[in-house]
Every structure is written in C-alpha cells, then in structure tokens.
Length: 392
Ligand code: FAD
Image (cartoon, rainbow, N blue to C red):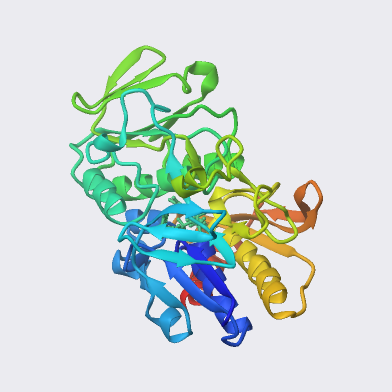
C-alpha cells in the first residue's frame, strides 16, 4: 500500500505541505489533511480588512481544490498523537495511521500572560490574532467607539507570530479612526524595547496620524499591565485607564497538539533546519509558527517556504526521489496608510545550528511615495500568489 502522510493544520504551513506532497509524489503518497475549519481565514491582510482596504469574505478560502488535487481533507481536530503506534487520534474518535506526520497548528496563547485576561474574556477584549470572527468583532468595536474614545492595545512579548502585525494593526485602526472618529486616541502598552520596522512605523504615524498614537514601552511600565474586562480598564504599571476597546495580544506558544505529543522544549518545537523534522522524533515534521527553527520570523510566508522544504524531503524519503538543499525566503509587508507600504525580508539556508539568513532587505525612511505604492502593489500580488500556492 502507499506510504501515508498525515498533516495536522490546514493553514499556511499545513495546506502547502499537503498540496505539494500530493502533487510532487504524483499520487504515490497517500496524504490526509486534518483541519477543523471548513474555511481558512488568513491572518495576513486581516489588518487591511480592519482598515477598510479588503472585505471580510476575501480573507476566507475553502479546501475544495486541495481535495481535487488528491488530498484527503478531514474536518476534525487532532486531539492526540501516539508516537509509538504512529497514529493520530481525532476528536470524532477515529485513528489515522501515518508513516510521516506534519504538524503546522499555528499558535496558542500562554494562559495568564496578561493578568486579568483569559480566553473567556475574548469577546470583551478581543485578541484578533487568529483570524475570523475575532477580526470582525475588533473592527465592529472600533467602529462603535464613542467620539474621542480610547483604543488600547496590549502588545505581545517576543517571539510571536508576525512581528510587524500589531503595529500594522495600529496603523489600520488609526486609518479607520481618522475618518470616523478623528479625536480618538490609540494607546499601546508594549513589553518590548524595540519592534519590527519601528523607525518606519513611527515615521509613518507621525506623517499620517500625528498626535493620535502613544506607545508606552518597558521603560515606562509598558510591560507591567493588568486588565479588567468587566470594568473595561487597563492598568499600566499601576495607573488605571478607562478604555473603549482593548485589543489584548497575549504571549504565545506552539499549538497545543505539539505539547500533547511531547515535541516541545519550553514554548516551541525544535526542528532540524534541513528538513523541518522534529529534534525529538524524525518521522514528524513541524512547520510554521510552532517550530523553533532559527532565524526566520513567524509568518505565513515563512511557513509556506518551510512547507516546501519539508514536502520535498518527505517525498524524497518515501519515494526514493531527489532531495534538494533547503532554501527559504520571507518578506513581511505592512500597510501604514493608503499606498504607503513597507517591507522587510531575507533569504535563508540550513545549518546544523538552525535556519540562518544569507542576506536581507528593508524599506528605507527616505523612499519616494512611488516606491511605497509599488511596495503595496507587490503585497497584493503576494497575497494572491500565496493563497493560490497553499490551496490551489
Ligand atoms: P496557521 O496558518 O495559523 O494554521 C494553523 C491551522 O491549524 C489552523 O487552520 C488551525 O485551525 C489548525 N489546527 C490547530 N490545531 C489543530 C489540531 N489540533 N487539529 C487540527 N487542526 C488544528 N504572515 C505573513 O506572511 N504576512 C502577513 O502580512 C501577515 N500578517 C499577519 C497579520 C496578523 C494580524 C496576524 C495575526 C498574522 C499575520 N501573519 C502574516 C502571520 C501568519 O498568519 C502566520 O505566521 C501563519 O498563518 C502561520 O502558519 P501556520 O501554518 O504555522 O499556522
């Protein structure tokens, strides 16, 4: 019978891996994708939806083309991995055997990392860091803010998915508020000294949203926060503020199935950079946000790039095919305001110590507006290309 690959998680890493393994093995490998949702809502461009640059439906993508491409798509949760028996157990009771297992479950939040907040409070204080109804809720809350009200964000500590994501979100919230509620203010409590593309964001905020955005870093207590979702208050280093919207983005760790399978070291799952295989179990590959792989940021672009490396290694191993040297790339685009796009990115290769950068690039402060508009257009092309590459 055909060798079996089971993929857990139909996001940027898992959908890409499932599609490439089915395609590149020409059907010689039996591929099953386990994913509870019938539609995948991309976190990428979810901030642009908040800003009014994309509609919500455009973020959603279904799994129909994966099935036509030869992937057996099962809509269920993986609840356990029996590594000795090489079986994945599903919430529905089924057991699915594998020769190779791919895990790309994204992130989960670390409980109590923001005192006062828990998943039970996610309607009062949304994270919107897994896309879908949370994203819609956050946008609706911003639109319902009283005139001159306060939008607060509790930014996450490193490492977390999408390093520029919180700051692109602030830009998009500011863009929306400038139109509908120009006297509103945005307050960021941030535990990090510095953040991704900081000079570029701060320059953009100054140019487009002057006086609207205040960031409180760790020197001023930005890392010592507490929230009260019932009272709608945020306390920063003991100073209590009434807020109208509170976007809490907690500290993150690998998706919980990684812990269930005992593949973690601390919060993340260490992998080999050569084929994304777990350092604990060679028959399991871990992709995307959950992986501790070295220098790549946790992004959809990274997860998609890592999935192709893993897919090639898995097909080569299971079909005596050819394995290519691991090469990765990433670019993170962010939109600050209409046609003001910025980016940071790099190429990478594998080493014994992990994935290492071979050179990168970042947008410049003194670029022309034509360059910024072109960067934004590039990101539109990327979105279409990656969703097509993942899901066909
Ligand atoms: P995901 O894409 O999250 O996929 C994980 C999947 O696994 C989910 O569909 C989930 O349902 C499923 N799953 C989890 N547990 C189980 C289980 N036990 N059983 C079965 N299925 C399970 N990246 C970019 O490259 N560019 C951007 O512009 C960008 N913008 C972003 C903006 C925001 C606001 C956010 C939050 C993120 C952004 N990202 C961006 C980051 C990007 O979304 C993630 O890094 C990427 O989705 C990671 O891919 P993944 O496969 O690891 O996880």
